[in-house]
Image 1 (cartoon, helix red, strand yellow):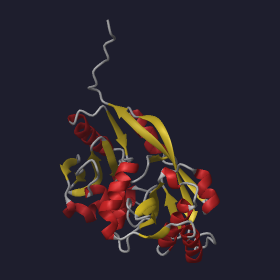
Image 2 (cartoon, rainbow, N blue to C red):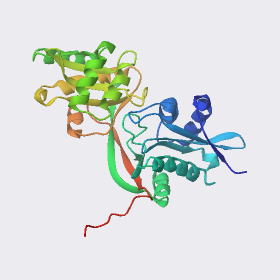
Image 3 (cartoon, rainbow, N blue to C red):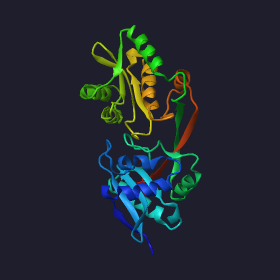
Image 4 (cartoon, rainbow, N blue to C red):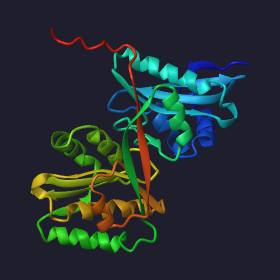
Amino acid sequence: MGATLAVLDPADLAAACDVLHAACEHDRAALVAEEKLFGVSPRGTPKTFGARKGGILVGVATVCGDRIRLLAVHPAARDEGIGGMLLTACESEVWQQAARRVRLLDEPGNYLAPGIDLSNQATIAWLERKGYVHRDQHTNLLVDVRTNPRVTPERAAESAARCAGLGYQVRRASRADSEGLSAAISIGFGGAWPFEIERALANDPPGVHVAWRDGRPAAFAAHDGNNQGLGWFGPAGTWPEHRGQGLGEALLVACLVDISARHDVAEIAWVGPRDFYEHAVGIVGERGFAVMTKDSPFRRATIPPV
């Protein structure tokens, strides 16, 4: 019996969680299933497909904008063309929007991961057979937050006091700060960061810490704005005129102390300054990710000038 494809809605969440739990050995997708399958992003509302066989959900995939946010097939239903069917459905959604390229997983503001985990070579090879190319690579760092002497409430307090001596107030942001902080980050940094900051602020307690000076934000750091509940750190940034004052380290430690209340390890996504994290809190591991992309078959050939 062949599989049938249909659009899913939140009523299918429990069955989808079962698929993700069985299928996603490299990511904790089942724990953030609602966020990934049905949650909005700066690109809008996603469309989620489900593949059923004999009435049982065996595969799911979500697409939003030009990103395939998630694709998974239950191990018991693999090698039957179901993954290819879901992939084609998502690609069709992307091409209908006249996008020039489709990418997997790394959707700004609502991503499961920065790409395909490099240890998942079977999926990478499958995508290559489907016409995808390994275009870039990203790294996430893992930090011990439960037994790490550099991640403690005492160190967070000491760091905040040191910043206070330089004229900065380091504190947890409140929901009342949302509008002004989001606007400042939008102007200063842009991208999907304001969206993630607003989601982190909606947590209880808010997962955002800010260094203020003269009533304006000088630096910020957040956690659990994306992949809520998994203990992911970011985004974080310091305005140029306030760099070199130790604000980033103070805010990092404050966020990691928050994460330590629920997790043993924090994950720092899309790492830039690796040396900063090594010096500030130490690194216990890392994960590498392949950015997989495919160009539209409908792109017009470039006509050289006469």
